Image (cartoon, rainbow, N blue to C red; front, side, top):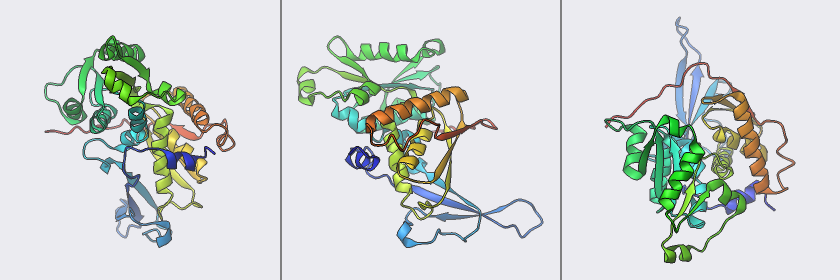
Length: 323
């Protein structure tokens, strides 16, 4: 049967372990005239369910911070999670090159560059805007590990066409171009020895933000891991709040919770699009996931939305690294 547990256990992963650090922030009662709350910090990374206890005083308001920003020295966070199941699949399907796109400081593009380089796949990045006078942050990482081309905003507005045209140039006359979605959906296999013998390129396009069904699996793997920690009990109504760019991570968290029988609620704070577009993306990803699982999870995932999408009350702040 294609149950979620079976799918996760049979998947080849990019990350050696789904483990992540979980830091708990407790809000302590204030004993001073000042209304400002006091906070206490604890690390529940290694606390399993069998250890009992939650690591803080019962009844104390608290929230947990999943520190996926510590997964990798250069490329981490939900960007690495979304590549966790995708990159091994692309390599098994004979991918020689990967092409993706993002903003000038795209964390997704940097993650693709770093992890593709680690897995022996040539990364090609189309970045929106102009080259920086002094590269910093993710832009610097992209330049270090990937083949970067800058695209004007007018060209970038037509992403699919831009990606495909660039992929054809990379593939050359003897190469092939595929979309990652097609490989996942159609299970397109290739004899890797034939690829090496012919010295032809097999170029795979990953859409901006890696919004594919295979990207959901890495996030669901995280949910399975978190459910084994003492601060995330099966019978507890956990409320997850996540920043939403493409919305793929939020959908993966919600799908993982539903399919693993967890009473978790996922709220996604919208960043880059309208509510209608996020809901369309959610429906599309859920439909693709049902196809991946065939009939086995259809009774678990209904037609109603799984994610609670909310507007952002204040702009997100960006912090750039300086060399």
